[in-house]
Length: 297
Image 1: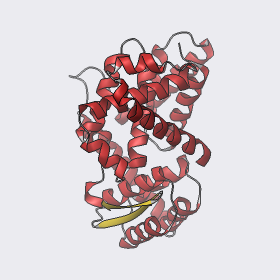
Image 2: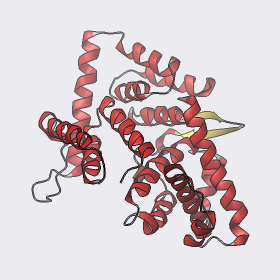
Image 3: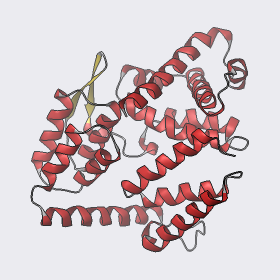
């Protein structure tokens, strides 16, 4: 059963996916929601109707569970990219000022689904001036960390090269554009190892917690990318990964269930009394990220 806050979160994620034309991901989320029990029948009807419409309207984005009848994932991604590129170039033909309008939205509007979509569309439009304007903006303006990361991804997709100097709180980070991860799988293995530890404790008995944690961890990795905290996490040993997995579990469990069971969580991940200070620091870091994201939005 999904808690009300969890359901609201999924509905928000679904809206983001649809507005940013991530139809394949939207279908996967809808299938997940249809498997959850204890919801009102009208919710199931809405999810079922939307899933059927998406499968009919965007067959190239359908991901079948039948390996013999499935298009390889690489081909699916190419299909979605080709479609996005076609739509962006069509809009450019209709309006030569389209790139500037997208840049204005990214640079002058608050972080939202619309700004993320604008960055994705900029990935498919030619012109070196776009690279320079994005780079200058990143280096000179105060930009939300998640929007910073999305803009870096856009620069990499556009084939830009070189270093970008970012302000992250009180520190300055030097980012090599060529190294910016384009997917979660592109992050160093330590990022996925944190989720593997959490999956061992939650994936079967608490799938909702695991799904929510996966979304939060992905956004957290984007927000701290290139910072000293990020480098420390990536250089960390197994104990450090246990600490982050435990802190993430604690953060999400508290958000979904409204209860704080720190001792139980620390036991799950083998976090000893000697590691407690680091565990609490990681927990506060995650909580601060969630709080700042809510305030910025």
